[in-house]
Image 1: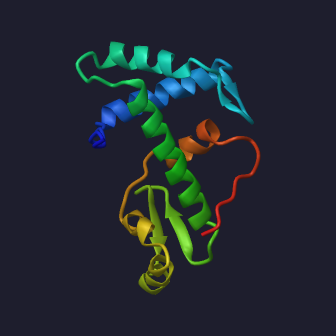
Image 2 (image 1 turned 180 degrees about the horizontal axis):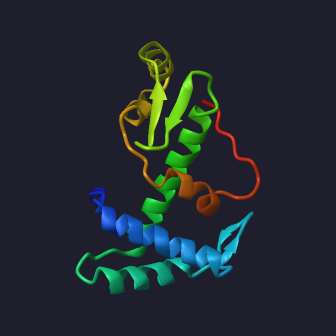
Image 3 (image 1 turned 180 degrees about the vertical axis):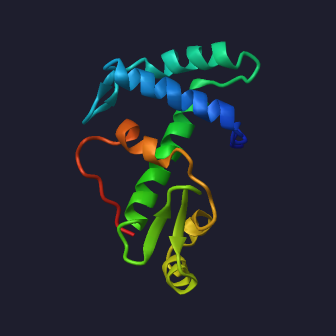
Length: 139
């Protein structure tokens, strides 16, 4: 069976989803160690349908976006623990010297696009997507 094409999200759609997710967390629909209560995707899908009626955003799109944010957050958080890496809060990007980056990415080619990519919502992801327990990723 062929895989469906990945959905391209607009900045506005991502911002809205992040706002909706934040609202769910603020309302207490979140369990720190276990994730969201069942049905949260229904709520988010309905809210996104109201905000973007012609976008066709479904639960699988929302779940995929949340998983991607979590994966990116864990990767970035782990990278930032490595000496030589920093964060530019104005540009929302990693800061690293070329030689450090080249050595790092040699063994992790799947992360090569992180070098110049902006992550404007990075600081919001941790409290929303990760449990209160310290998560570490071996890089």
